[in-house]
Image (cartoon, rainbow, N blue to C red; front, side):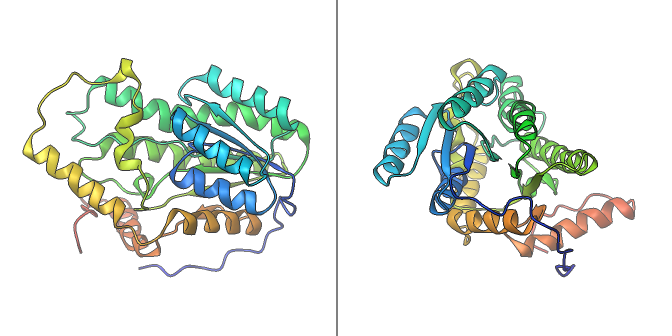
Length: 296
């Protein structure tokens, strides 16, 4: 397995965080909420976006009780108009945006030919278009401000690997990886004051395995009895997610450290690097793809 290599010491775009504004999609639970708490501890103001109304209001109230400047905006990140409204609310309330976390995500499973059109529209709408809308809406604002800023896009190790029964999710996260790498190059070419980090976690105990709860009614599949294989896969995924040894709070700390260090790749689970290396070697050696989901 490749060892972590020292990265060049670059000047971090962001040095001051107090009173800066962070916009976080998927901010009412999981990694989004953990990042919000970490940023709040640094004195930042929060703009939380989520599609889960009850959780959003509860979290918003908790932050207000803690005297954290916050607004919670119900947002469907797959819709451009919702992200545009989110930006308008952020600017009207706090006057600027300095950190953007494109974090909202969903994770349907199944073989690629079994995923319905609704499955594909849902996962690509949230996981890919949500990031695209976030970048297209907020980056011009951040660049016009001409102040220090940072973008964190939440992908997954599924954006660096290709595994069975997660095709639509892997497709969406691979898109986020290359989108974020291209964004980095675009900003570097323009000598922008905005830094970029790509977050690629493995299993973290969050509610991602139960993201079906937030699927819009118009994209729900017709009710049917699941096969024993499907039930077994879902149970295995829930167990894997819930048994993750690195918490959402741990990941949030790593994200903040990456912002301070101006580090692009954030891989909270270093043991997964062996699987990533195997996939890269498969490509370079032109051999058949290895199933990296199986124990080696």
